[in-house]
Length: 325
Image (cartoon, rainbow, N blue to C red; front, side, top):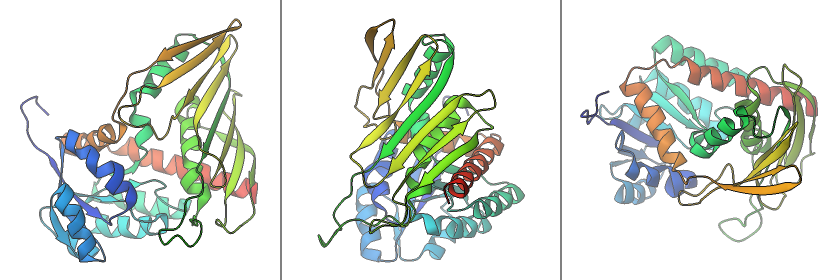
């Protein structure tokens, strides 16, 4: 794509979810490669609220949106249990799909969708926005340069405090905590330790009033023997970070997965009994992720890495669930 190319991928939004309203669609104001052309909701009033703020046509039916000629791709922020169904329908309609994490609640659904995307020559990408924040690339550079020596262990936590229901009557129930909340530390482990992770052990907390899998932990190992200790849940105080422990020191990054655009990340490095803080650059990871998706389509890039990533992550989640049963 040349520097003077003004093409933009035309995106349709399936569902008026909170993540779309708060983060994803506002981020597109900074991403010239993507333009919202339609928003679908079961309630037309809700769709109109979105289009008044973000543009596009309001549509009162997901299938109707999929039939529109002015939609090249769809963004799917629906509840996780609906991701596979509407991804398949969108692919069958000839649309590229940018789907919120977790893409699927099971490996079989992921395999079916990836197979269809490959058959139709369409992009299927899971929206792990944090992967596209420059802070993680900088951490990887520092580790590769030997800042903490050889990596011996990776650890990560992601916890979400319980929130009141919209009607104020109780607490928010989570339908599938393991794939939703564990997704962040599991994906971060893959980012830093590479492919081929195996589950050495796992614990999934029994069902409670807050969901069937309100919390859990996992112990993974990489092919070269580096361990990853991961914890997650929705009955916790807020945690969102990771740590790498090496032969010469360790580093810690907080707010790693839900980083505000204007926030300056601070990397804490401990070596030789001294603590150093390294300020990293703020970044717009939602905007960046939209750009990755749009460029892949507009530039006819190889879609294989995105599909492979979906399958690798789904397999790992399935392995954790089996080990914790």
